[in-house]
Amino acid sequence: MDAVRRGDGERSAEEEKPRFSGRTAWARSVQTPLREFLSTETGSAAILVAAAAASLVWVNADAGSYASVWSAKLSIELAGHGVALDLRGWVNSGLMTFFFFVVGLEVRREFDLGEFRERRRFALPLVAGLAGALVTLSIFLLINAGRSSAHGWGTAMATDTALALGLLALLGPPSQDRLRAFLLSVVLVDDILALLVIAFVYSNSIDVLPLLAAILFYAVVLVLRSIRFRVGLVYFVLGVGAWVGLLKSGVEPVVVGVAMGVLAYAYPAQRSGLERASERFRAFREQPTAELAHSAAVELRAATPTNERLQQLYHPWTSYVIVPLFALANIGIAIDASFLAQAFRSPITLGILCGYVLGKPIGILGGTWGLSRLGHGRLRPPVGWAAVAGGGTIAGIGFTVSLLVATLAFKGGELQQAKAGILAAALAASIITWLLFRATARLPRRLRLLALLGGSEPLTDLYRDVDPERDHVRGAMEAPVTLVEYGDFECPYCGQAEPVVRELLRDFGDVRYVWRHLPLNDVHPHAQLAAEASEAAAAQGAFWGMHDLLLEHQHALQSDDLIAYADLLGLDPDRFADDLNEHLGAARVADDIDSADLSGVSGTPTFFINGRRHYGAYDIATLSAAVRAAGARTLLPR
Image (cartoon, rainbow, N blue to C red; front, side, top):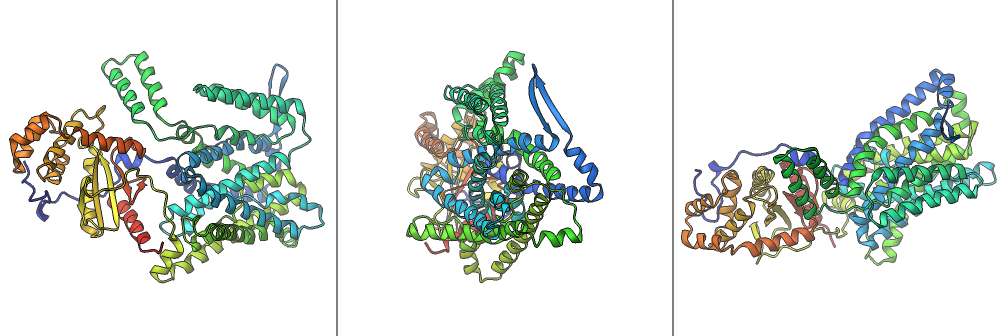
């Protein structure tokens, strides 16, 4: 067995474990809905740009085939009744409903788990989103005043979430999670606003009976949701019924997507549900019958948040297939010198271009600043003012929803001019954003941090603050950055994370590390006793020595092994054995478990950095970047 740790359990340099710097299976598979949403948007941006380029190439190479493909009729009939749309209509009104369904899911997630769970924080992105949309469309109306084209004001309003977030990843600052989350909140507001405009401004004359039928279908959905009915196929059929009703009534049916999406709850996975799922799986492992397989599958689905399951199912399809297909079907413009000359004299093109490039940053930055001033500093953006401005400039990319509104508001040559304005605005917004962040990067370090990070207090996720008198703390007691880990001594991923944490403490002198217990008894049968053994060692001043031994020897955590470790650490063996047999540490372990439940922690390892939950990988590079960002925020004025 390895040499005994010295004193408080610290190892000598030659006894250090090898550095672990890879991405573990946990890091690859456990992602938050927000992290998955943002990463998917980033990855899909290139596909969206490629689809837009393919559309331009296609229409300029063979405009006839482009028009004939997307104008081909497709009808679906049942018992003499049905829906007939051209292929572009099926994409715009049908498939795009799934896009807005994902928007609804993300809105719900933000209210249940994100920044909006503290409701007052919703005021800032609400005002910024409304101001950005209103200033943008006001500029369009000013340029188109007195012309029939003014009817298309809704084209200059909404931001393309996918493309804006994807290009922000390429053009923005290196550490930008808070900026991307803030921008996502803002653009969700103008997406919802644009959807209302589509429904009430750009719908055809209303047929009351189909509209009432759509409302009835949705009412049934609400009733089933209230009784926690869980059969997804039934909700899908009812959603299709509501979609057909709106289409027949003359209301743009994509609104059904958001209306259905906001009904899906988002919540942290509950340990009780995970434990039931583990029990069912163990029963299936012992007796692999079809009945037990079905039972295990049901429990696994029940343990997974509905919102997260639906996002995982639909979001990749909307980002990688539906939105690029929408761009392919709608962005095609026959470009030549005469068209460009005409377009950039057109008030439609200029209104959209100026609206997005000027209106979005003015509205978002002005709305955010104005509300912060009115709130006397109580409401501040989660990022610095340069980042808010950069979010405003990148929000000038109004691609997907803007194109959708343009196809409803304009026809013929006017539609082509609108498309030219949308493309030009996206290009100009990208260039301006790149220039803004390059200029910010040249500022002195303190000014740059203040400009990008701001001085607002982030919403904390850790329910119980660190108490040096109670918690097990390693590192500088007064360090400005605190890393809290909820761990399980038998969890292999906790074992892989341990050398990373040790390396982090060695590299950063201003970090203190806290271990809290979360034994997953349903999957790790020795974890509870190991946690109690660490508390028995703590009673003799050797918590960290026992902590290190337990994580290094995760395969040997039986009672005899624990007593042998106590002997190696030079503890009083009789006292240690008595404390272990009497489970004196059980109350302390249970207290940590309670705090984990209150903080929404259900798996291990789970890290918190200065009270904020750390999502994603826990390799040395990722954790170091997160610690550096947290340390930088502590330098900013409050």
